[in-house]
Image (cartoon, rainbow, N blue to C red; front, side, top):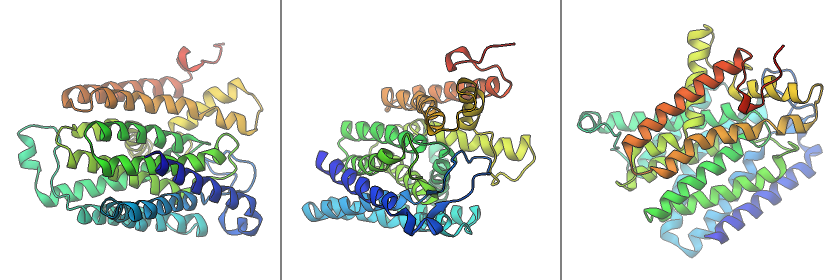
Length: 363
């Protein structure tokens, strides 16, 4: 298992280093030249194709696994194959800046349907007892799960706002998924979780804290898709795992996305697909880091924002680890997470940041 992590890490780290070393050859195409967007905090042209290195880390390690264990390797290849539509759409946006949100969401939906078809997932428990019998019709389940894959793929793109933010959240999530996969003896989920951890860590080495390269849409969508596939497969293949584990282990990106849609469309009356600067991570930066480091435009002010969100993500992951086989406990944990998120967001946005977050002095 460790060899898989080491191989994916080394591949991703080396390729990412090469992308950075020779960025002068491709920055005119791959570089992020936009310094004025509502979620832009970098001050130099930076390549945003980190997803390519992560994909290659997964692909090369999957090929190795296929050679040493063809049965397991074939399943890993199928998941990687299913991810291609959403990755291609994301990387195309990174290179051309012309692939709209709707096209990327459609690609995510197609990737989700492809994954469900390849693994013959047509039923799923939702944790609602007798209601599951009514809900568990093949067409409903397939559409719902494909929509969920699409949503989580896009969610990782939404939270990818600061150096190391989305990538470390993904690593924390994969560690939790790997732990439960080990507990229930699911080699497919366990192996792929370790491969993904290694590939993301190889990128993280260069992305955090200095932001020498960005994840980009391709990387964010790829990570979100694979984690969604892991979450669904773990629940579908193991009856002892609560379906709410898949929700709680991804609580932060899921709720950030749902809250963003509500905030933009209902509260602000805007197109939910348009970017803005009111995400949780943006508020942490503006309300806390700018106060703590006034006038600091270096990468450290950016990098110090991410750990706040790593902690927020862990507030969902820890209950998922503790009660992965208890639906009632995870439902209660989900309710607590939603309440805590809303209260904290409201306090920050109204300039009443809680003391435990490092509240600026009150006038």
